[in-house]
Structure formats: C-alpha cells, structure tokens
Length: 274
Image (cartoon, rainbow, N blue to C red):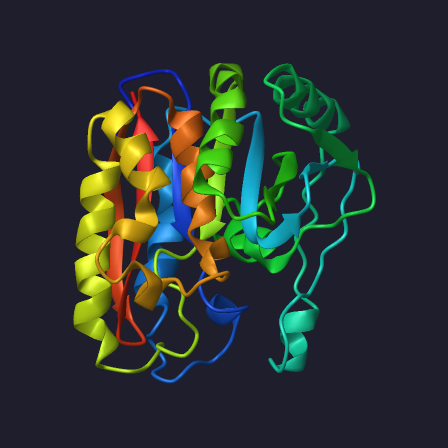
C-alpha cells in the first residue's frame, strides 16, 4: 500500500504520521511498535517522481493566531517533547530553510485574503525534524514550516492549502505532519481499537472521494463516527494538517498509502496525486 501514482510530473501532497515524540530513535515497549511506520517513512521518498526542490511542512505542533511561515536561512531545532532519554535532545537535522520560498508563500496566501507573516526566529519542532530524519535523512532539501491556525477551523485550513497548491508545479513537496488518531488518553487502551477502525474507515472514504465531496466531508469531519473519541475537542491539531494538504491537492486524487495498528489504535497516511 506504499506505492504512489507517479505518472504525473506534478508533486503530490502527503499527510504522514509523525509518531510519538522521538519514538523512532529510542527504545519502546513493545520494541517493534513503531517499526512499520518507520519503514513507511524511510521508503516514501522513493515513490516521488523526482527529488523535490523544497519542502513545505505543516506540523501539528505550531499553532498561531494567524498563518505563519518560517523564514530563517538555517532554522534551529525545537525539542518540544518531555521526559524522553537524554540522547533524543541531541538529535540533529541541519536542513536549510528558504527565505525566498517563505516570501512566496506569504505572497500566495495574502493574494487569497489569508493574513500571513514570516517568522525568522522559529525553528523546526519535532513534528518536522523527527519524520524528516526518516523521509530525507541527508537533510539537504530546503524546508519551510507552515503553521496551523489556532482557531482549528477545517475550512480555513483547506483554504490555506488551496492558496499554496501552485507550489506543486514548482517541484515543492507539501507535507502535513500529524496523526490520523490522536487521543492521548486512549493510546494503549484496547477498547479504542474498534473505535479508531471506524473513524479510520470514514477518513479513508473521505480522502478517496471525488475532490469536491472530499473537501466537504473533511470540512465536516466532526460529524464522522467517533470523531471526538479520536480527536477530542480543541485537540484536533494532529488532524488539521490533513486538511491543509487536501486543500493543496486541488483536483488530485487522494488515497491511503499506509496504515498500522500502534498502541491499540489505527494510524494511517494519505497521499494526493494526479
């Protein structure tokens, strides 16, 4: 299920799971809990039509009162996880930023009436550098991080993505980094296995629907079965990157490209391609 349709020369958009904290770079119990997700992330780049010239990544871990983009030439890392082994605070990912791309993104957003600004101080949070260490370990491709809007409005995030879809024709890969299931109190509880399955089935059908219907379904995701069991109120920031990349997908077709049971819940990845 990891193969993408690369018949088009246009870059796809992706929604990927970024795991739990620095999970891929430490011991876990059970020891193989994140192995299949790590394997998916390590092989995803091989499905692209060619190497991207730049990457725009929207992470669940940056919420702002208006849309922001990182514009530092060499962003630092933000170790925004707590209680993990000391070595996980020494992980590196020295990918460059792209001030020029950041400026273009702000211009595209503002042209669609979306207030947006550059942030030259913000570094990459773990929703960026943890999966990117697996996706593109050489850290040679410029990365610009895009924030979520703290209103948590799915329509707003679809709109943000649509404003940026032209970047796909410029060999920019747009990635949403989050989790298709994210209820911290539910992880590890076997009662949530069937609940997460039902929501994941709905989410998959929504993503794979015709683009106009897809956007309507995602905009109304809270009406999905068990929606709030899987993403509690005011905690849906891990799902909203999907809305941004679905918006950026335009008329491209969406489909599930990875799924696994981790900590008694179903976690999936989706891709949109022509």
